[in-house]
Length: 293
Image (cartoon, rainbow, N blue to C red):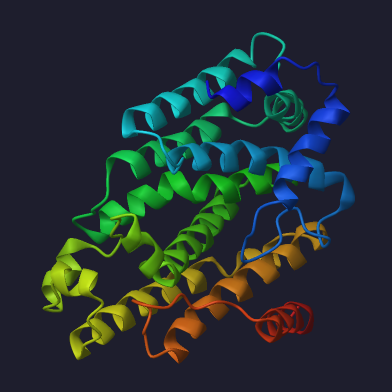
């Protein structure tokens, strides 16, 4: 356990105080889109914040500055141990005080949360993916559990809805990979499948040199097109859920598509500059979510 968590765990936290801690942590982190946003029913926001705080903390461990890979893995393992212990004994860390309440309230399978930790361990130990299927398997652990958790918070438990959610969440993860290509290269992480680098005749050496070539443009166009296909596969979810969740899902779906459009508008020049959503872009996403209900 990290020193800061030892300090936090020495305090006594009521359930309300623990949710407050999670909500503050949620608000303090930047995201493309608001987490536990204003458009979610108020009574759901604290539960989304508890799940986010759990995942955000573990994700931070995976990238903790000044730690060795072994120390990062140990921190994630400790986080998982606290999760499992919280199911049989009173939790002391505020994240698990709140999360335990959410798990019990909505009958959430702990395995979904453990899947997220599996992905964070992969971030520490794996920095290359041979095939696109390997990348999709990573998304199965890193992204898809999030959508399933949100559906459970709204008592949507149909497997067909879960599969639509998986398509959207995988697409969001991929869109984030293409948006963050330059950021991940600084961490020596390459989410572009090695098989695709070979297919389009673009080397990893060129990738790290920031070489923008016709082969790279074609490579990225291919990635964006199949990511868009996944977004389309999951789009029926937007009309299958009720009003309690539909607007938030529309914001997420149109926001993800807007990220891809930013990559296209930049002519796939993402090696040296990260495409970002401007205030106007976010207003456009909001308008699309409202007008196309």
